[in-house]
Amino acid sequence: MYKFKSKAAGDVIMLGPNGDQVLRLMGKEPAAKGIIEPADMAAAISAIEQAVAADEAARAASKADAAAEQDKPEGPRDRVSLRQRAWPMVEMLKRARAADQNIVWGV
Image 1: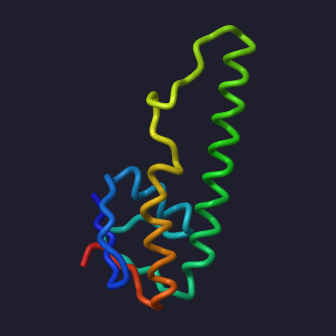
Image 2: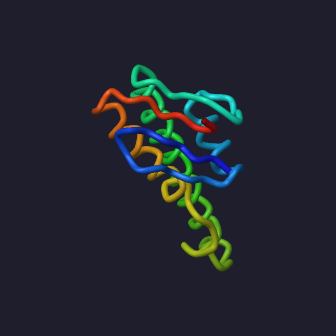
Image 3: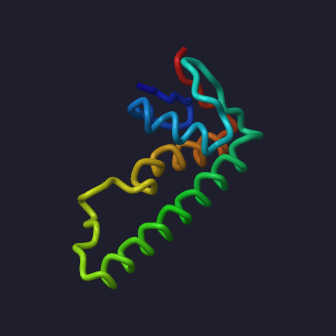
């Protein structure tokens, strides 16, 4: 479990696999402790937003394929989207960057 902290925003808590995924998207290796500095936040936000766009495109393609095959498409409650999982971190990154504050975890 990850508990991301910043003086600029409330804590963001993520389960291990979701936190690992978001950290990898930002170019960080999952670790028990870490820091994201303000200089790295713009690139992290951009990387997450690109991954969210790719995830949404894949979901749309999957629904279109299922509709073409007359299968039941994956419903919105079948799986939590990357956008839903990553949104709190993106908001924290934006606030921390605006306030020039680090984001840390495991400390």
